[in-house]
Image 1 (cartoon, helix red, strand yellow):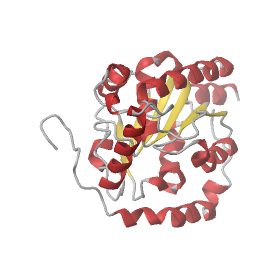
Image 2 (cartoon, helix red, strand yellow):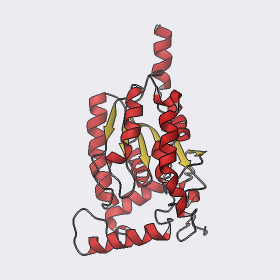
Image 3 (tube, one colour):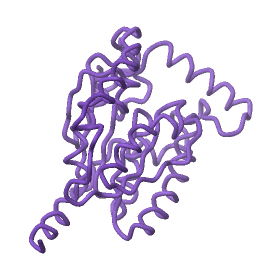
Image 4 (cartoon, helix red, strand yellow):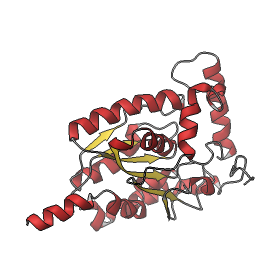
Length: 256
């Protein structure tokens, strides 16, 4: 990592570790405490944002778990997370506005990988609409500190974007005007009232774990694959206290 905190080109854990996804999902499904989750306290509304090249379908297991806990859940509307960050965050901002308005209260954001960087930008951009933030394996300190295979995919997509292919990032997104505000929001301090956690894994086979540790959030380490963070039991346990509204819970208990 250089003097600017960049880890681009740094090695990540072996890619074969990502084959753990199936086992991680299986362990989650047989975990009685998580499988049979019920509402605890006062659950916050949650907006889920998927990772790079993934869509909302990648977070359906997490959505089902959240709903069993009593959360009102909204999805991002993303089919494949490959668009320019500036455009994507602008669309998510409108989604956040609608969802927070429907709920009549601020929303908790849970983003996986690139989705966590989008969620962080939203928390800085619209602090009045956000109460909590969870970034799961999200490279908030350097979006290109990824494995060589993923970096080749990014370059290929950027080439398509440069050719004018719609809905795809381009080489200009790295330092261009389209993403300048987004890049600033990735390093800006988080609002004091936003309860934030950055979840990382030293055995992440996609992203250098060091760039996932947000200096403005609590860091929480898990032994997970990168893709498996959306189905890992330890990640779910880390989310439980974050997604409960402590103020409303105290009021409900006093009323009871």
